[in-house]
Image (tube, rainbow, N blue to C red):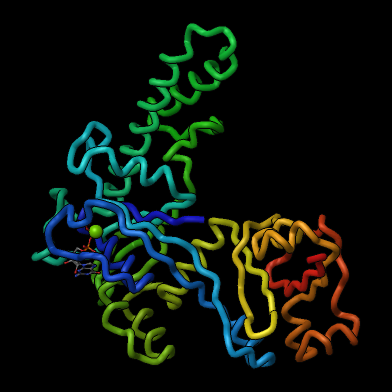
Length: 334
Ligand SMILES: Nc1nc2c(ncn2[C@@H]2O[C@H](COP(=O)(O)OP(=O)(O)OP(=O)(O)O)[C@@H](O)[C@H]2O)c(=O)[nH]1
Ligand SMILES: [Mg+2]
């Protein structure tokens, strides 16, 4: 599960990436600072795991994390090789969800690649590039299969997709083998100035990268106040990570074993058998059953054994579909 940060050059993508990952990617006032992508893990803040550890006193705890990729800035005609060209396309293809950063701050000393500061226009420029890149791929595939009878159905589907894309519309159909860039889930992020001065911004997750850089040492209450003053979302970076989790349909389950309490990210719909495989292949191979306990019941009973004796824990078979917050104890034949 991977999130890609995209947008025009010099909009604050790498700055945002650094705040999230603490990876220290290069940031500079000139466009196209990022050439190759930067990859980093972002820890998912998790009060439930904090609660669990308060009770278990586990000496080790591990938060779940998701991967973020900071992708090179793209400009108009990037699909034809303008700017850094279309290498970014492969990088975008690789991610499951995009965070599209729009510049909503002036800063005379930070160069722009467009004449006007207009977040909505910037949004369209990038969206158009994604669609044109998709169009090219679709056309290439059509050329390749148009004479082969066995691809008739695919050809019809691709032609419909192509028609939509050439009208600048997002196709309703998906292709399957060719996941279109324009169809990736998108979270629009508005990078506001730290005083909330810039108005007329489109809808999106409101954050000020500059402000977040400056308030690292403040208390949570102070941060919330400052964000509100800047017209930003009160939950800042954490809220953005949560938004990504929602878009990715990621839920968390927990294991408490010996020394360690740990959170695991899985796609919604994951069965306990699949989860066992994620923990350890032996656990899946020798899977017998699982004991499952909602986190809230664990906290209420203040312990797994206590919850078991109060009848909260349920015994489940391999088909059981995990719920967000389940604590899972897997019985398996070693
Ligand atoms: N005033 C202001 N400057 C910002 C803000 N966010 C980023 N910057 C500055 O803008 C410049 C570009 O930031 P980067 O994070 O390198 O931008 P980028 O989108 O990764 O740029 P490329 O890699 O070149 O595409 C740097 O000088 C940042 O310090 C902000 O919220 N306000
Ligand atoms: Mg960058």
